[in-house]
Length: 179
Image 1: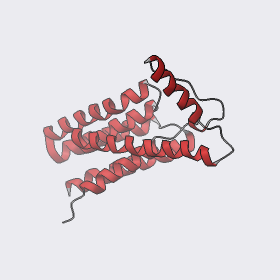
Image 2: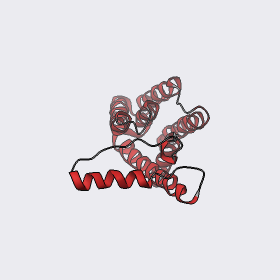
Image 3: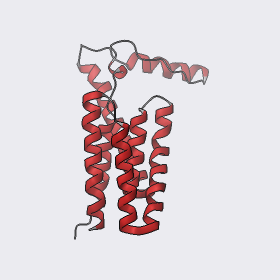
Image 4: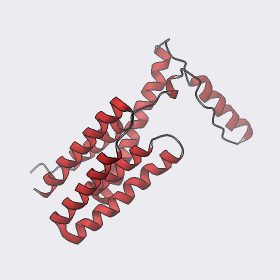
């Protein structure tokens, strides 16, 4: 029963964030803060001080996992804050696993975007740019980053909340007790 009371509000949070990210390319702070507050409150009611500790630690772990992606420009701040809010429901170990699943799913989606450029003639392929970055690394031993050209498929904004929703839901389904 405790899992049920934590999981369904978490799913509603990620669904709301995903819809917002798809429509507006942003995740509202109010939604994320309300979700985090609800996660901490539910943990407090269901598990007392230990639940609050798990919620706060989960918040910190969720933020820490996606913070490097934000700092490097791969994700938005809303994505990192959403993962932190999810951490209040799942706790530190759960959010760590859900975040890793989300990153893997995001990577698969990104590869799908990149390979779609091979099929579609409407967008510029990133493969020449990737090859140039790899050649530079191989010859000089120094990595470089070449930004995507205007119109390149990898230059488009991707709503990462979709990956968070899929990764978190997959983790929840994997953890859900069968009995």
